[in-house]
Amino acid sequence: MSIDEQAHALLNEVMTPKRRARQRIAEPLRDVQQHEIETPAGKIAAWRHGEGPASCSCTAGKMTTHSGVRSSLRSARSASHQLRSTFPATASLKATAARPTSHPGLQQVAAKLGPIDSVVTHSFGGPVTGFALINGFTTRRIALIAPPRGRNQRWFDFAEERGISPDVVHRAREIYAAETGLRASFDLAEVASPIETLVLHSMDDDAVEWQNGEAIAKAWPNAELVLCDGLGHRMIAQDRGVIDRVVQFVA
Image (tube, rainbow, N blue to C red; front, side, top):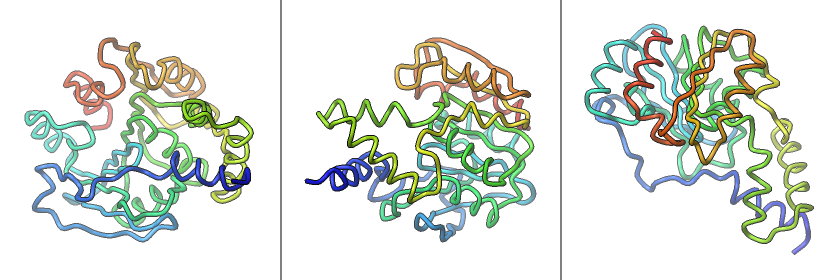
């Protein structure tokens, strides 16, 4: 294959989200009407529960909007749902959606299901929100859980595991930047948003080193860093202490 063909193949593997044939739906959402929102990256399945200003939870490929933050989170905490499932509305990219460009989806969810009062993210939901911020999105408060500064190194790690040349990665980054209008070397720390922000990271995170969260918190002028240990990359989003801290912050 040519280097461009290899680069496109790498992009398809790295950037196309893996989706269940049938989405899991949190208990609070099962009786809520589903919406489909058209975006440049494809359709987003979305649920909105409650009236008034909402809080939006965003993970690597899933977004959640909810209102009635205090009561809804308390009831969901007692059921021990994952953080993204603790909110009474969820928006997820469908399996048939094209490779996401990240920020338009969040902005269009906000336009259709907003107003958005706050954003809570996990993992790559942080950069997704950062993309939106530099493209005009705004909100009152942001909570970033285990946020990576970007996908830059992940592409090289992914390629190395499969014996793919770094030249292919560089070309894939060029193609990605051209297609999306975004910098492939995007650094969430450099966004330096003035929005009041809470950054939470576990020091034993083996997927996204905690120094990512530290760098973001140092660069964002109104950010607070909260470090914990023993929760890794995924359990931190399910820990009741972390959820309590986030609820206090966004409520």
